[in-house]
Length: 371
Picture 1 (cartoon, rainbow, N blue to C red):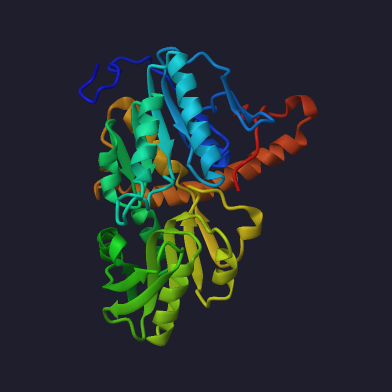
Picture 2 (cartoon, one colour; picture 1 turned 60 degrees about the vertical axis):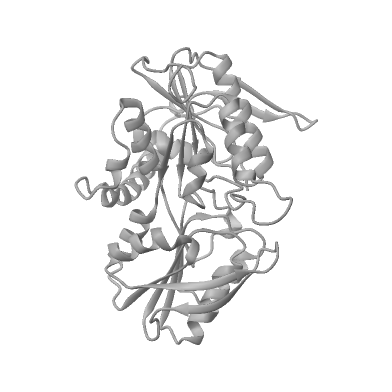
């Protein structure tokens, strides 16, 4: 047993394997393209009675397994798939199981701020640990203390560097970074990377509704270009409130970015009519076609997660990914463009080839994608 209470995983075979559930298979395939490997084969589907069935189609005995499954919509189904797959790998004698959860659902339920309410973020952490995961790899948790809910090692990546580099390439001047108090620490790092001042929004949430009321804008924003930054955009209610507050302050242009584009309810309609110049999110959550409007730009976190997976397997530093010495962020953005060009060339070659020469798909995962 290790110091964290899990089984001893100090010795693995050289190879590691990557698998996915049905939550975001496109991201898993992109990660495998970055790692230059095939996606592991598994059957993951739902019976007519809504029970989840999982069968691993490869030998994973003593392998280092990475399971990619964000807990996005449909949330309950995605969580259950994650837990059942972890159990399947454990019973198949995998050497180490790393749950790669790019988007961690129930992150807002991280404290008991009302009488007789649960701390659901802790409950999800307990379930992942009990199912048999040996470690967790995730991105931009709603609050950092969620890491402490786990009794297994947690690596938390951030898209702050990738998002800031995207806006730095746009060469915008007279910028101000705007955020709420909950995301202020990471937003300060974002502002420093852009060499821009930080303004903070004071807000209060109305009851248990997905709605917030903006009280004050703390900082000088008038006449500037504003970039609103947050960990996630859900119904976009808070984003719209902040946008209206900035417009009252006569901000010239408004941009927005977040790691997780949940975009539930009428969020996309709100963004389309808001006057926001551009909203940038990552692909931790798949963006369905009807949500792909001109104002919304998606960046891929596949190279970031892929590099973290490689480093975890080799026992190298994950934190070094964000050091100024490595400068990997720009390369990761360029990788996305190069990957698209490679895919186009591959598609052309596949079209020219006969049906017998067509490549087999990377994975063998069954079931519907999450919305």
